[in-house]
Length: 296
Ligand code: ADP
Ligand code: MG
Image 1: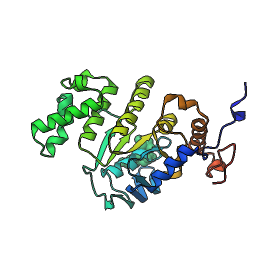
Image 2 (image 1 turned 30 degrees about the horizontal axis):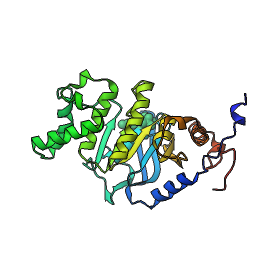
Image 3 (image 1 turned 180 degrees about the vertical axis):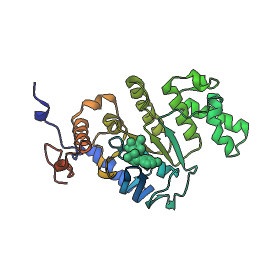
Image 4 (image 1 turned 120 degrees about the horizontal axis):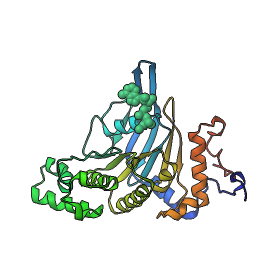
């Protein structure tokens, strides 16, 4: 058996023609969200913590972008700022060129913890935002049922959250967020509390939903496979200070399927993410992780 080091992997920077076409096409799309020189410091008993420093990247229309990094590197701080739940110490976030100053209907949120209203049925949870927007009851009901159909929960419309499994609760949370028709869906480790099998099925499900709905997704995870499997691009954050180490165009063709987990391009990307996250400073230069080097 060859050792891992002798496995002939392609470079994670190498793109097959279909991937290259998609990457080029994505770069042409309008920018939905612009994150410009974002910084966030906290004062703590131990002194100043720089949770984020000079974070800079753009998210394009209908892109699926993941942010990955070790625990404590500032992922949740970043997504809270994007959601408008927290203010940055420096820099700014723009959505469709408007500066974010607080929460807004243009952004939907799905968190790891289950955030459904326990006293409302599944259908009423999905209807909640629609009624807040002033949509009439019959219309809101009809729209809620359409979103529940999309996430495969039509039969559970009259159940209460406590009667659902963890995966089902997250599907309701996704339906509820999408019902408000956000420009961008912000997801903070939404499958982090699920068992491996449920998590895998939720990933496949999310990709199907994203193919059918006109929405851009920014997804936070610390799971390398999950980031690669779902995303067009992966933003890798390092810790102390939380900063962007590299933004990787995922060299795996769409549509995605679980067999790709073992493909050379997938494994090469995973190896690169591991290097970045384990902080081997000598290897942080883009391209350093590739066995077959490609001029970048
Ligand atoms: P992640 O989600 O990547 O695990 P967080 O964004 O939760 O990271 O935290 C990043 C850093 O900022 C950590 O060192 C954390 O302790 C610190 N931090 C986050 N929120 C606060 C806060 N409200 N007050 C003080 N420190 C905070
Ligand atoms: Mg977090």
